[in-house]
Image (cartoon, rainbow, N blue to C red; front, side, top):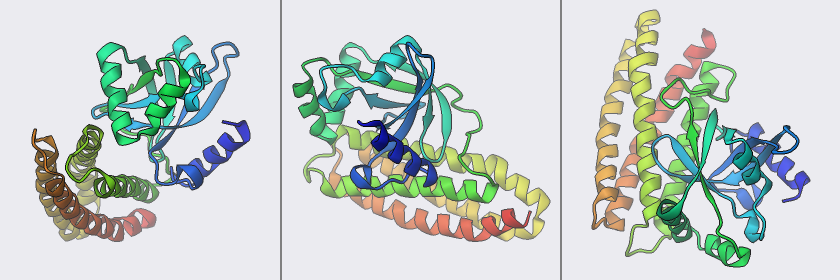
Length: 280
């Protein structure tokens, strides 16, 4: 893409914690900063990505169907380390080019979710690479793109809201008789991320706040109870999308149940905790 177009997307992405308009509106987008293979200078590129569960996401070196690999991919071949900005988080990543069946299965999932990838493959006349980006510090404290605890809470919550909205959209627009493989992965990755977030709050944030603000004990108790209810709904969704004979209607029902509970929970948590953080 032209550099001025890319820079506009980059600026909008960073200014709005991952939200952009135009042709990328409603898409899963990240910013990938690689190091030039010849110049040694950093280069940032907006890219669509696929959730892949665990500690990695996938990006596809389609270059819009060009016969040549994109610059960012050649940079990663020379220096397989990059910085990833997801909107809510920034982290260092290790890049691994998928090979053989692993690459083919990942690309097939992408095509199932968006046939445009197949058109790019046909146009390119080359095997379009799929790259896994592994969070090097997975399991450690996340680097949230925010300047204060209250802003950080809102940024993370909004990231969950956006992803859940995308999943709901994908559920409603997909083939009514099947539950696509990539959609299953999207749901499972969302469930794991939400579980990790709530576990971190229960083990670190809430005890910290309880120790310093005992007057907030009732609110924190309610939030913990809501975490338990949401955990049950998350497990129900896991089962619904993991079953070999997964029914789309069942999965949609579980997504809607989780959405209703989670939206109320996030709103209450922000109402209670953001003023507390601001006062501190």
